[in-house]
Image 1: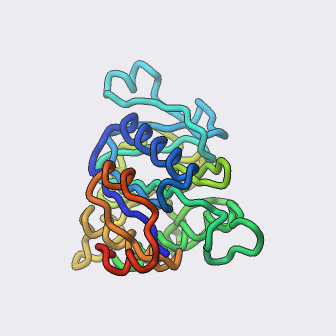
Image 2: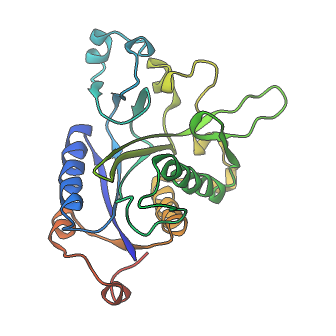
Length: 253
């Protein structure tokens, strides 16, 4: 079993959303296998289904002046910032497939989110950053110590339609954390955000490429699949679903 892997690079949110919709449609028709899209966005704010406009601290005029786009989308969660230095992942997975922890006809959305959290916890660990889950606060958080509270290093918000997932996670790698001043991230006012760059040791400083490779590798391990590299969207959409034998001869990472 495998998961397609496509790195889109830095693209505007609208372009990534359109690509995601193409891949979702193909997955629902069983034209392609499960897929992980990874991307870096230009500055943008997204409002999930549970979002409150009051959690955006800047006015529409201020956002427009700074060139910050605003999108209302169908993922779970509140308001989230995406921008340069942040690794965003859009897993498009059929939860009815062969997935770890599946107990019935499909993997439950909560169990799916736990797998995403585990992927990111392992990725942070690759850079010497110890992280955790916090009950009722979806995402990945640093450890507390003394008077220092936990900080959010990765956000998660997903959508499931006809058993197929969309949207996903955002890991702060080298993100300019001042950009989060425009919002109350995920509607949580009593905790700060952080990044791998801030938390990692000086001798283990992250790059976007290193974070991408680590995340892809850990995603495959957590979901118990091989990661099959695709060079382009056209290649992904044109390729038929591969058998295990054909995957063995393909470019697997």
